[in-house]
Length: 380
Ligand SMILES: [Zn+2]
Image (cartoon, rainbow, N blue to C red; front, side):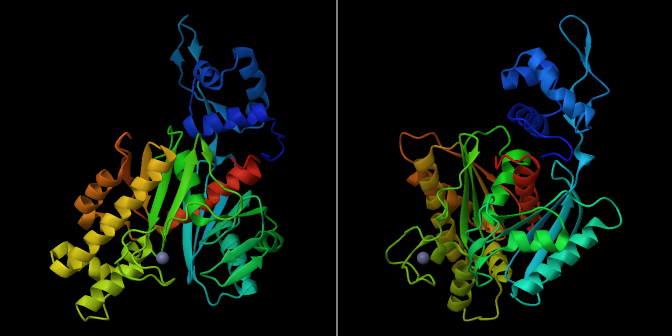
């Protein structure tokens, strides 16, 4: 709920429509929500009285020449905190209700001990809140099988966790309602409401980095599956004579396109074990032939993954992101060729948008998940 305001389903729909698409004239809001003008007035009245909605000062003129004041959400009415946990660092943001970042920070993780991490989160939340009003919710995202409505993290391989009640522990430590979510789904939620997915009823977010991930929005719903993980594209078979992944699969997508696999392949073939992924990417960008060939193989694998996701779901847009997405610059032709070759011949080619990556985007995604679950109570 919005503090002090119990949301009916109708009020929630109006609020979300204005949050994501606003400001909107009353006529446009009523049209989009298929409501009569009087029904819209009834639903917006308590939201206006509690200050969550504002009448925009400058209005256009309606058909009868009467001034109409568009409605908008007041984004400053509540603050959100989003936190992304990686294997060795914590990234955190404080945002407004539209997930615009107000402040951000990062901390190294001293250990994977649950108590240590909860303590670190408590200090980060305190610092981001400062002396002002505390954030209304905390969202935490991490790689693993966490899923919005459940405070328990069933598995997080990077942190070595099983069945950790992280949501409850952080809520107790901070006094703020807390939501925990898989990181790719959280990033997808942010794209759905405040990013390249706005206005698209079906799209995918494909991430490339330490692993490959895929978040899906189908028919305006974020796909959560039945608790067994979703978008698990990393070990999709690409070529039966390719390199091995750490699970022993020959030629899976991850064996070609994860940042670790690329680094291993380039540094191995050049006999330069000190090369980082970024250094390998720089060599490929300079035209070093062996490095370039390995990045092109990665691009082809990624293009096949994206085509397969699009073929199965019929979606219209794929947003490509993740900490290794800069590699697209050196393998775009290979990616595009593989995408075209593997797209079903009856299908319309999917739009691909490249989204440059920052870790704070992951944290922002966590803030959006917290907004959806604990403020709007919808789980969207
Ligand atoms: Zn594999």
